[in-house]
Image (cartoon, rainbow, N blue to C red; front, side):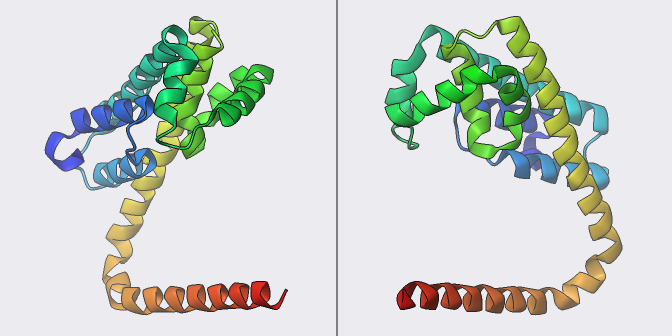
Length: 191
């Protein structure tokens, strides 16, 4: 979508992800940063598309939470593991520190999608929600796009070296994972 639609694709991915469609938003932003490092995308339109897509999606989710409320979240949430008990716990935590959760929740994948719904259900002031949500979106987008940019710069410098060692690195990581799994299995078995 990024290569075909560019900034519009980024906007749509981030908007739909915030409404609840499972798109890999962090990966999208990181790949966008990589594309920026390669000169395919430009900084200002990329940031605007990503931030506005996230804000628009969060605002829609807030509206759904506020006007349609808890029954809709529970009806749709059952498909992604949201039960009444989980929603109760989330609401309780949200009510204690709603501003901090809105600000920092974007950095946690499953929480990011739930936060605007909780803000709407709990009737958080929309202006306050919007300010903290926009600040959060800016920080979140800046972080992941910057990571992608520096991965792109590093890839450009070192890809010729990595191409020769990628297979060896993957095999070593696979071996470590197998050994770790076997040790864990053996410990559980011996208990």
